[in-house]
Length: 89
Image (cartoon, rainbow, N blue to C red; front, top):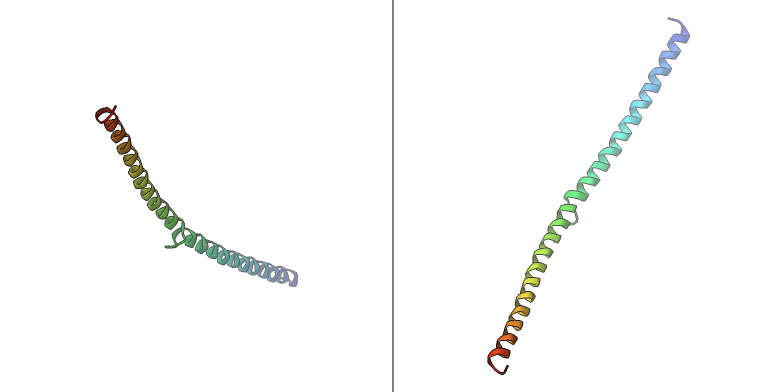
């Protein structure tokens, strides 16, 4: 093996080492990104699932309110019809 071959081998090893270091850095960056995404989805107070849960609870409350108002209006209409027919129509 000549000096040129040893020099090329050393250069190749250095390049390979640098590429492995860059891959390691990118892997750390990806891990941080995945943790951020996980927090955004699963955080118990501000995550996506928490927002969907809150929306479902709001929707259930809104449905109860709409039914209550609908029944009240229906009752008032029926009372007006009954009063009109039997009390002075």
